[in-house]
Length: 304
Image: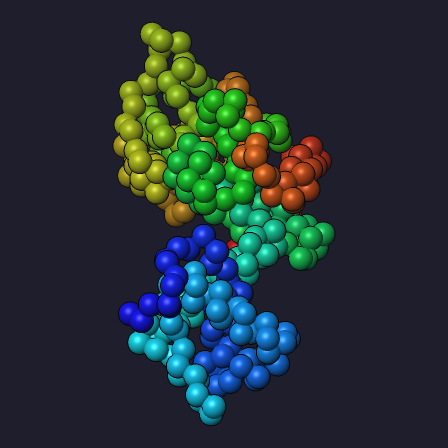
């Protein structure tokens, strides 16, 4: 590459305005037109180009009285400059739009029977912040993985690393195959479940064998996620204990839910990162608490 006379190389002084200047000169074909496009003086364009050449230690342009052409090194720098400027514009756009989208993660069932009401009220009250519900099979509903801004948590989780708010409780129910004899009953007692094989998700499930005394625990079949859990129950070989939110969110053919009359309810929390929370966090927490407190739910939407 052609070295700029008397200059060494170094990137400490490289700025995006230097790259914009180079691109403007080449695209417009002159320093005069580049100055007009950039809204600066022609002298400022000359100084900026010279500063870029000094920073890079190479001559970037061949100038004559009529033309401006990139040197070999200038052509290489120009191609990289276009990529860097495009990347910077994308970065600014993503950062600016980040507060206009709110991602709420969950492992199984979002807000259960309140999910539709949450979505509708959010769209009405916060039309400038698009809501996205993200299902992710992890103990933090995707929060630790950086996939969401807040997460709905029902499983036993150490809340110490996170900012969190208690939203409400959900009763537990029993999921079983629709042709199971118990499916005709109005309710089941927890002690009865100990006689069956229980489908358990150790990673994100809300149920553990600690619900029963050690000597009276059911047999367990461990599954990987909600889909495996539903399949094991529909087959008839297992039953499942779960919050009512699951029953509201998942009603596949072949599975019936019945109340568990004497099981402790499941606490529901929203968690988020303590540092730099999303500006809409408080609004989301307040809405969730209100829905759980009032028990309001929106009418069912066919196919939704």
